[in-house]
Amino acid sequence: MDQLALLFVLMLGAVVSVPVGDRFGLPAPVLMTLLGIVLAVLDFVPNVDVPPDLILPLLLPPLLYASVRRTSWRQFTANKRPIFLLAVALVFVTTAVVAFVAGAIVPGLPIAAAVALGALVAPPDPVAATAVAGQLGLPRRLVSILEGEGLFNDVTAIVLYHVAIAAAVSGTFSPWRAGLDLVLSAVVAVAIGLALGWVANKLMSLLGDATLQIGMTLLVPFASYVLAEELHGSGVLAVLTTALFLAEYATDADDVMTRLAGYTFWDVVDTLVTGVAFGLIGLELHNAIRTASGRWGEMLGWAAAMVAVVVFVRLAYLMPATWLTKRLHAKRDYDEEIPTSWRETVIMWWSGMRGVASVALALAIPLKMDDGSPFPDRDEIIFIAFGVIMATLVLQGLTLPWLVRRLGVRADEDVEKAFEKELAVRAAKAAKRRLKEIEEVEELPEELSEQLIRRAFDIGTRISPDLGDEERREAYEQRARRVKRLRRIQGEMLSAARHEVLSARSEPGADPEIVDRVLRHLDVRSLR
Image (tube, rainbow, N blue to C red):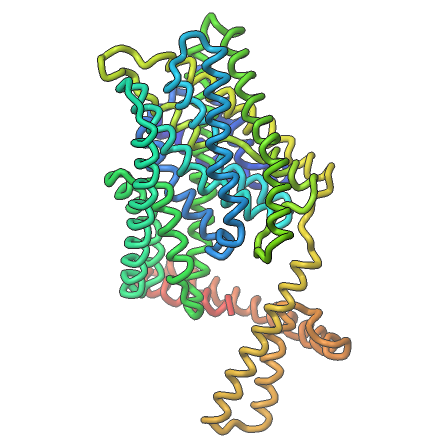
């Protein structure tokens, strides 16, 4: 098996792991990690040969962009305090504690190298958190906080990591310089993200075609990441800024085909890239195991100690941080979504899984110092990092669904239904307002006007059947049954038409381009 064949195996696993995970109630990323571990121990499977400095630029931009598409700027602003406490403060605290413990138990480990280890294991993975927690029916406020933490903590951790690596390689460290680098990195990233978001928005309005617009959305995250890194900014923060800008300003409510095609395209990209990323985590375990040859007991002990540190530091931090946030929320009128019980806090604690970013940072540790000597304890750092990644990702990922069921933490369906009903009312009222505006400039027959009013009401009741009173609901249900029957028969008619047109592809003299054009027309008609 060569590298290309291995890539196809991982992509196939990414597709298959989704229905398998749904069938057994297990997160697909965890299944892909287990698949990678299985492949790593097979003799005929080659070692992964991906340059470490390419892992983050290749994997993170599409994953981050896909994650941001599921959220909004309002959610980030609503959760700014919890996200700051988790994505910035907790990363600093975890890095400091890990560095202290690692320096104490690993003989001869320099402070800078210990800080690098702390920085690379500190951030929970945004993809793991959203992929695992998002499938469990958790309250939306928890998922929003986990998404925000996962998306922003990489910014803090990666900057800390680079500062620590530079100090270890050069042998010098300046706290003021490190703080200035952090601020400049954020400023450059936000500026680049906003600029590219504005340019991409203008270009997409000029392109017009849905295919070209979706292709542009695939290129923009990579461009944002690479440009920010070239200018010494945070590539992660630049991608987040660009994605949030496009989500706010590049959405055309009437561009239905682009929106539907974009959702499908990014779902496919998200599934494949996520599967490959977590499969690589499992495959890289082979290299980590090789570094522990002959020192299993000692290095497993170090890794277990670091796992305990990152897990219990998160718990010890979350309890007072959640209490503080609740107190501030109670005293002032903050529009924040916060955990409302100790059960939700426990779920947030157990959702702190490490993943792709930690792997890439561990593998990117340089081999040599500036003076040509080997980087101190590089093999030990990599083994410990993989121990933390595997333990948190596999153990927590597999047990999180059970813990959610055990604690009974579920989304508030009444709140969700109430908001859905509110949106249905607003949609129906907007349709009626537009109808009145049209009637002011166009004279409509009474029968047509009444029919359009019923259609406006149907817009709301189709979204939320509970919108109308009992009599109206019964009338709507009767119409819905008639419409359902009509659509079923019409669907069978369109199916016969599509089969007939498709059969013309194999007829002598048939132009396949014209056949596809007619077939596309029938496909669009079927969506209505």
